[in-house]
Image (cartoon, rainbow, N blue to C red; front, top):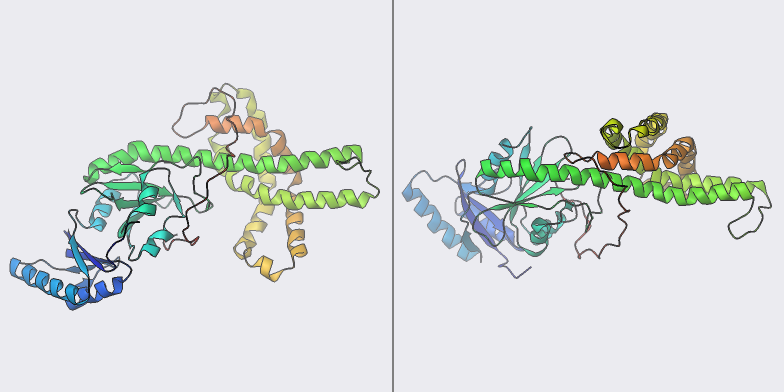
Length: 395
């Protein structure tokens, strides 16, 4: 980011609050003190405001702010746009369904950095959040797991940028290959909502579907390699290097280790299968014969639910388990869970090809795929820029 004054007051107007002011910069607290001493008051969302009831009051207020800002070393600038919260509320009211709009003041550049890691974007929004100064934003939620970020378009006197946050199960979003592209929005809420409804939200749904599926397929691929090794050892009675298994307990130990590692990946299958399976419609694809495979997969998913619920019963404590349990005990827990779902794992491995082609044909809003499953998206990712790996306050 280019250098900015360490203390700023950014003025705009609001139909509800009158004159609004956002304190911003590395020493934003000085800007806040200047606003308070000039007669501004806090409003929901953290900004300041003062009524514009008449011209004389407005002039008096402006004069007081100029003097107080000078005393505190603050730079006062005027935005050509209306207060962002007003646009955010008008825009949210025009989106399909029910959306909330929460204003977030990014007082300090470090606060802005907190919003970068959860962003799931391959367009202008992520670049703006990394390289530009963004004093405020609006977070939009629809109650169904979709979260969007709206900011003023940096370097322009009008227009906005809107993109998506990743859903809660994802936190590794940098250069994620399925990430949707953010959209540039006009200043008119009606036109902006229409663009998001017809263009961005369908693209977001397709991107999320593909991300679920790629995560799912990667998980099965991780399991498959170890499973094939285990099967070969069982069948041959020898290790992969040809050394005979002298004692049967070694096979048992290999099975335990496989169950341990398999559970770590199969959690992804249990997480994403309930989203993907109901969308599959074999009769509408060139492969109607896949219906038998999908029926087996549904049964395997149902048979895994008791284990999945047991896992979810203590998953909120998982981050503390490594600190409170010896490593071998935590490994035993994973092994037990993996062993309980081993028949389901084997079913998913056997029928994964049918499932993948059906799920790729079921992309929301897309035409049924007429080709074989696409290659795995396992390309290396570039190093993430140096931003703190923290969770944004809104998440």
